[in-house]
Length: 255
Image (cartoon, rainbow, N blue to C red):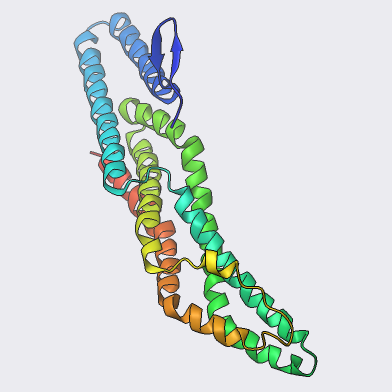
């Protein structure tokens, strides 16, 4: 969230100030038109009050949504939860590679390494795919945290003043992405088991740990469906939330 700035005793959020500044410029423009064009005062003032009312309703709705989402999920910027899943998937893949590497160093047993690698690839393929899509979600969360408030502030003013359809689509995309990432970070981790603390204690060695592939396979098999679901949910979050949010925002902005 943006830090509060106080100037001469007046405190405000920078993103809120941007929105109201744009709206104020629009109001001045409308007032100038009202007083310079004969017979347009009532019409221009009516439009101005209407747009201010729309702006207020949209801003109130977004504020209410953000507050209630935080209360219901406990997550506003969910990067920590997603980062935890990224580290878990990465460590699982690393341990699988360490196991195969040490089998290759086990003299006459090195021929078994290809079989062990194929056995563990059932799991590492899922972890690698999940790592990629989780990194995209983490990047979206970073963008929303850094630039989301500014983009929304400008979009609110545009929604009230000029390009309602376009601004509605922007608001819909930003909010849907944020809600999607927050919802994903809330529910996706419940489908998997976090083994990071245990896996960090494992240290495989040539000859001594020839059965490491079976140990890891038995361990990973317990929640592999959860990881598949996590990868699928992340893909759906990336695609559907943006599509649905943008479409809904545009359609609402047309009315």
